[in-house]
Length: 476
Image (cartoon, rainbow, N blue to C red; front, side, top):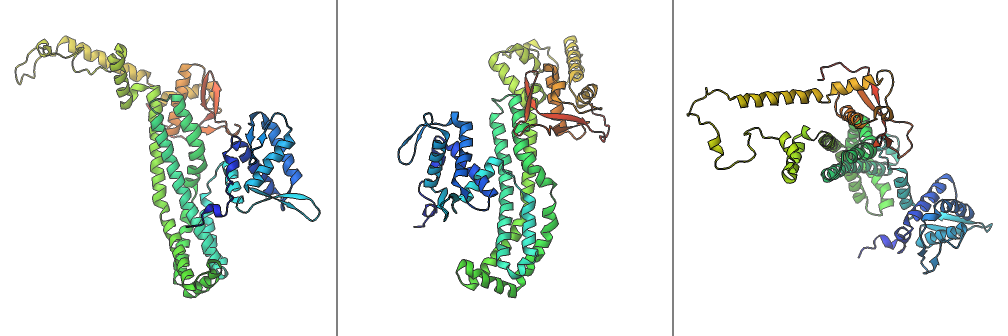
């Protein structure tokens, strides 16, 4: 039976993160890890206790009573912050996250354990916001394989390059699957959500977590194409260089503790996998582009369906179903089939129509038919006149002073009508290249604040700036 993870980790390693105060234990571990990064040696116990006390004093109201490993009740109401800080530190030491050492001068320091360090780093990365660095992966692969280190320490260079190539592919897969997750959530929420929820999903969550943090950086980076051919060439040369393979395999045996031939094959396998990984980047990027386009299109259609339900086929079907179930005569009249002007069909329906001889295509059109046609035509042109086209929305922004300065939501939204115009401006700015305005995020917004309240509406915290280089087109 394999030894497994818990042959290294203590059995109760994850217990602090499974208690009722798990959020606070995670925060304390992140706090310690950041102090650890700022110091060249272990942290004195008093320093750790003092920082823990500062945190606990700010969050004492949210601490819950719990039982530690010795089943001792930990009251948070009858003791001071120092006592609670000592208890938290003792629990983290007992669980194996931290260790305590007494130095020759009798000072006590708190050290990080070897197995706890990667988990603390992961907690700190999640707490600080995950950032995917596609460029650094490719640059590192190139510098490892094409730099001077490949000559004398080839086994270390190949190991690091292989790790970075794997990380690049994993990051691209995560990005692709993240987009799919947002797409699935959007479709699941489409039926029961509102336009404001769809806007929050698109502009706050998707754009903030996927589009801005990952997708845009991926599409604006040319490092993959710039370095890839050089990497391919170097990999081919290394695979043909028997002298280098033998020398690197001999050094690699000290790490793997196996035969030189097995180390040689392992090096060749990693080099071939690096080459295959970089070749798979293009198909992954194509899949990411496809999923991003599908999400943006679906999100826009859902928002349009809520704002102007009868503008899409799906919206019309939805209104029709509501009309059939609710008996809404107003909606039913807007979605009239226009085949027969009858409320229902019956066996006598055919007798109500004037009989025609077979082949008689010259029969005069009835006055009722002409009136109905003229009425439909008038209603059509009235709808077209009222439609908020891209030209009308652009003119509306011009009237608000958009050609002279950026426009913010607070000055654009004052009523339900202007709110709808604002939503149309967001849609055109996000999906149309021929719109005269571009959408910019508010650089002065606080971290995590992606929306603002104005006139009773929650909208994205953005501004509209006139695009002076826009080509004038007929946008009616």
